[in-house]
Structures are given as C-alpha cells and as structure tokens.
Length: 127
Image 1 (spheres, rainbow, N blue to C red):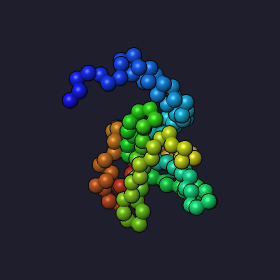
Image 2 (cartoon, one colour; image 1 turned 45 degrees about the horizontal axis):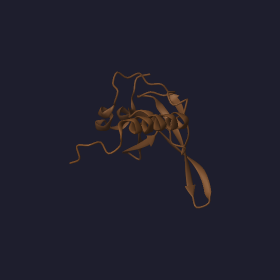
Image 3 (cartoon, one colour; image 1 turned 135 degrees about the horizontal axis):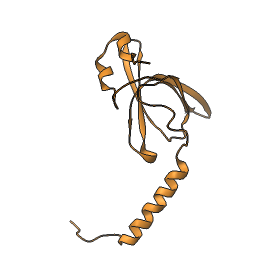
Image 4 (cartoon, helix red, strand yellow; image 1 turned 90 degrees about the horizontal axis):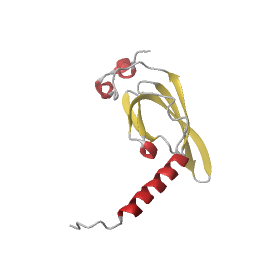
C-alpha cells in the first residue's frame, strides 16, 4: 500500500473546488418540490431509435438518498397486483418534470414498511 500521497494536497483541493463548481451548474433548482410520502408523477424522456417520447411513472416516494448531483429518489406503485419500484436520479436530464399529485404526511425518512403491505394499504399515506 502506498503511504505517500499520489497527488499533492494543493492539487487535490483545487480539483475538489472544480468538481463542486461543475456540480452546482448542473443541479436542478426546483428539486426540493416533493418530499417522502408524496404521490408523484415522474415524466421521463425515453429515446427509441430516432424518436423521443415522454413516459410517466406515478407512485409514492418512499425514500430519498444522497446529496448533490448523486441524489436519487425511489418511487413505488402497485401495477397489476405487484409492487414496482423505480429509482430515479434527481438531477438527470432524462427527467422532464416531477408533478406532485398529493402531499403525504409521514413521520419517517424512508417508507420501507409499505413493501410488506397488501392492496390499498400499500399506497396509503396520510394527507
């Protein structure tokens, strides 16, 4: 194992500042419009061949994870009796918009308990 720094300390600090500056440019400004527990509709851009269309995934936000450009959120819905979860990068250019259909009132940061529920209880969140 190498005990010496491969990059001098001053160069490492400069690189971190450059990465932070680029990250701030690419972040969405309206990313905090929804919270965990909200019912949302996520509009994603899908490219098929030479065509581009918008695909909508509607469900309940069961968690948010990460900070900065690496932040993601998980949306869960019930489709034909099966639970479907999808993880979206928050600042992705593939996401056209996120609409909040209904605000939920929850007391947890992650709603993993919804995974074990059946039927209508699987999407039930207080208003």
